[in-house]
Image 1 (cartoon, rainbow, N blue to C red):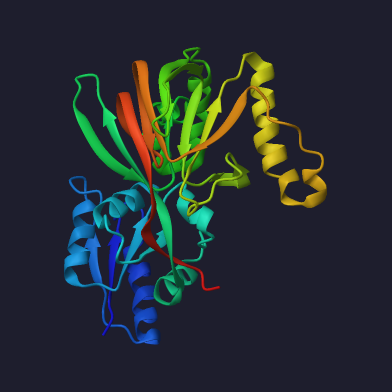
Image 2 (spheres, rainbow, N blue to C red; image 1 turned 90 degrees about the vertical axis):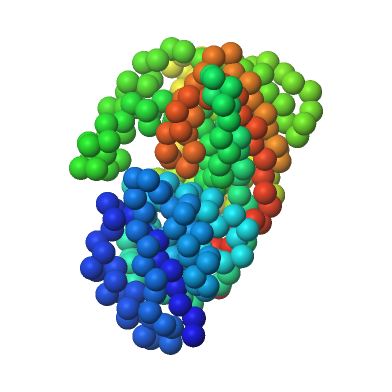
Length: 317
């Protein structure tokens, strides 16, 4: 008989309530009892994912935030066993982009047992530190330098646990006061290197953020490409252009044919480009984030898309 492996973050889930819902779904759909695996400070999910694969589970259910999902996806590697999402963190960006219910555990569990299997792209990144050491990771949502990475570094973890997204407000205010720009050389798809200055660089697999904010409106999780955003505001006017483009045009006008007719052309403060590979060499080490988790300072990185490398349970068509 089929059985699921549930990998959960004990800090972010109500284990008793989750077990009750999963037990009921097992019974209703004729599955055997699930294997329950907890993440820890020593293992964010990679080793637990390997354990789930070795156990012969038919599906790996991840109960946690984007960081836990990223770690489990990294542990699955081949993507032969489908991954199902039970959103339990602050951002839940992958779940938002896939249409997984954020506040309905029973509905999310039902998708895990009865949904359709689809394959999505995975980003693979090798980060070079100041001491020239390297580490390789995967990401399923986005990698970022600049505003988002610095904001995460400035966020109080204790306040985040108590106040959720409100904890980012103070961190954002601190970050916006930082006048420092990113200075780097980059290449796309192995092409010629170019020099650039920017406030923020986002390399994304999907583009929707919390509160219906659409940062990268053309991003798709299975198109075999990164969507890359460059934020290059010059003063207050530049930030106004970015917020107008992202909040109003991407979030409102783009949703209808009539609204799209009123959209403006691309603005200099916000540029988009697509690529399957990107290489970055920074003038100095900068904070980097992967799927909403800070990963320290990077002096350089190489990222490439791995098309349809991960199986995911989607809501049934």
